[in-house]
Amino acid sequence: MASTIVLRPAAPPAPPRDGRWRRALPWLLVSGFLAQVGVRTWFARGRTGPAANPDETGYLVAARWLAGGPGGDLSGHTFYQGGYPLLLTPAYWFSHDPVTVYTIVMVINAVAGAALFPLGYAAARRFGLGPRAALPVSFGAASLPASAFFGAFALTDAVLPALVLGWLLALDRFARRGGLPDAVAASLVVAYASAVHTRGDGAARRPPRRPPRPPRPAQGARGTLAGLAVTVAGYALGAAGNARLRAALYPDGALDLGELLVDRLTFGGRAGVGAVGRGGAALVPDRVHVGPGRGGADGRDAALVRHRPPAAERVMAGALLATVCGVAYAASAALPDEHRVGNFAYGRYLACTAVVLALAGTAAILRSRSRIRAAAGALVLLAGTGSWVAAYAGERLRTHAFIGFDFPEVMFLTRDRAALDLPEASLAAAGLLTGLLVLTRLPRPAVLAGLALAGTNLAALVFLFGPSPERVRPAPVLPGPAAGGVVADRSLHWAIKVRLRYPVWWTGVGSFDVRSGRPPAPGVCTVVVPRPDGTAPAATWPAHPAGWRPYPGAAYGIGWTSWHDPSCGRRPGLRSG
Image (cartoon, rainbow, N blue to C red; front, side, top):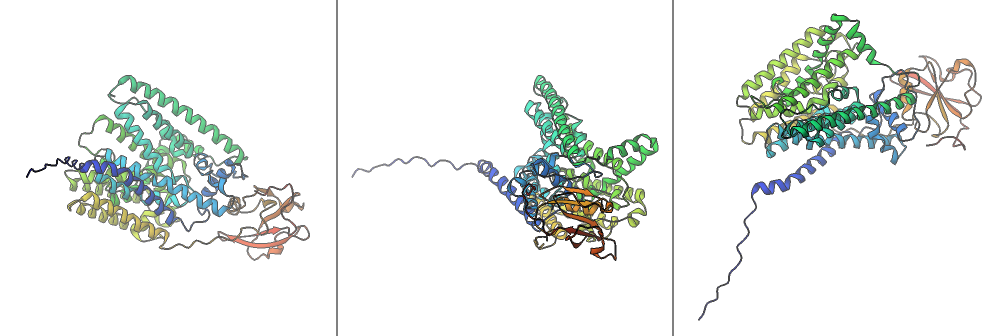
């Protein structure tokens, strides 16, 4: 009996694990990005309007004006540049309701902040971590309160961390390859950053230099020239846009902190420059307290994770350290003394560098052959900067006003919302750094470090925002329908005027002098006047027109009364949105 032999094709070999990993990586990055958006949106879900004024109101009113809506008179306040409001203008395409617009702004902030995860992954790979290690570490670093907390406010701090990290990555790629697209990308990012906040000006004035020993020198030279041209053009375009915004919203001029900077650096002479330098150094410790504790950042390893780094990494180290020192120095020179603790240990302006410092520090600890020595260096830096602040500020750390908004991470480390306790914050940061060292002795240290970093940051956000903030729609700030003109008495406290600019979405808030005895202009339906303590609302405007009714209100502990004409409604010819 003959036998039949059936030949079956050989089974294809199983794809290598690395191949499966590469195919899964984009999905992991997208999933992590969406998770970051969800976490940030969740913690901001109770936010329905601006709280950090006048900053938030300045950006929101500017975005409304850029979207074609009414502006407002912000004269006398700091000039809030148009780069960030331009990013918020889509919120006004969907609604004019202030609560809805603010909710959309929180989503925009969440998306911008979540970009730190894929960008952080790319940075972690450049710092020498493998792909499996870079994912958890970058996810944990992206959730630092330095970005996630401030992302729950309509502030430039929501987008600056991603801009700084994106700029450094593009600059690093240009330094290594000398490609023209990389130079253009770095210049575009930094030009936009300069239009967002003055913190971006320092980088805009340092365009990409010719990379050291590029693979193609001619291409590197072209990239340098192209980057310089894009930087100059982008900076000029941003300056022109900001000039138009300043003319529209600051007709009587803005608070010019640049004059204070020039005065301190010129008329102060050597004493002025020295004082600014000491003040600038005092602003760095807040980043150090939150860096070593949760990221293991050592000043020597901020961007150098090898013992003898190549030229490209030296370029990146110089760019990062120059950014940190430049922002600290400029902030110390330009910010006025407001008798608050934050004037002497203020980390918010350096928060845009926190993620990259945390990534560099964590990579340095994980890859170092002498982790104990690296950790010891971080502890020495921690103790030294803390001592510098204590010596520089002295009693002012206890006698000046402590504002928790200036110290979100430090409040979590000390569990104290009322005062700055430098020794306790330093001990807590040292304890977290010790925990990171312990994790490096266990299997899969990078995964454990990333999980610990993310868990610690999540606990900090729960502490800062509360476990379950309720979303409560605020009551209308003014009586009557959203129609007609609104004016505020010239003697009204500035905080009340600022509070009115955003919820009064249908018109700009004008100015009026109730002491003149004249009635308001035709079309004006609401007049807001101050109400001194003990004064009845009806007595706040003796010369009010017949039929107008007073409605008492209060904000920031300041009394005021809004007088409204009940006959006002949606009249033809009046702007209603």
